[in-house]
Image 1 (cartoon, rainbow, N blue to C red):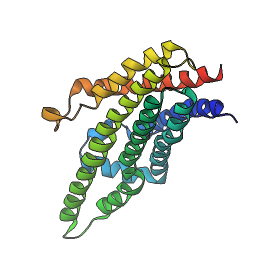
Image 2 (image 1 turned 60 degrees about the vertical axis):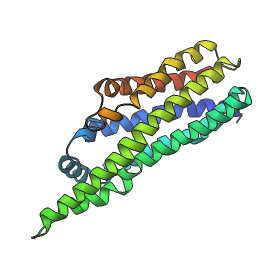
Image 3 (image 1 turned 30 degrees about the horizontal axis):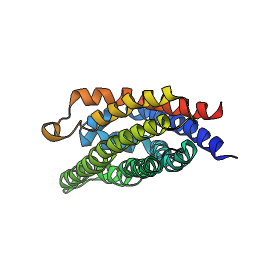
Image 4 (image 1 turned 180 degrees about the vertical axis):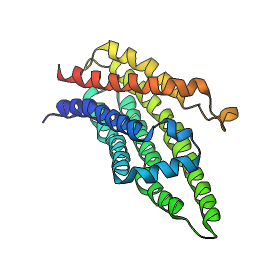
Length: 231
């Protein structure tokens, strides 16, 4: 299998796998709307989801980590000037890692917290649940909002802009794919500001609205890149 074909397969398969896992989580867990609910509701619904829900989170995690080989192969295939190639690999790899770090709590940390939360009983039950809620909320804000969403959107947006610039600097893919990547990457950068500064507590509604639209456009763009490499 050539590098071009391998990159094309990943460009098509990774966004499809990510969106399939995302859709499944939305269907059985009301994701991503559930993320803005209170810890009590999230933990109880997670516990009720059982192993099937955990496996769905694991699938989303693996699809995010699969961006690592995609980033490297795509940079090699495009063959942009060295500075652009190195930057796209470094920023893209960082984006994949922070997305993975943001998601890893769901299949590994949250199951234990949910079990402790719903099984708490006796005179210390209320105190136990409060402690679990605080720990969950802290992980949620740090790994989810801070690392997964803020840094994830920021680095993914920057990588998208670098790939778009790389496409425009070479003749491997049509130039119009590079131009389409520019507003997509910019939209993700705006989404990264959802919980920054004065919006830290409740979020910036405009950014929250832009993010899902940007991710759909980004997924379609990646698939288009893969198809472009196969033609």
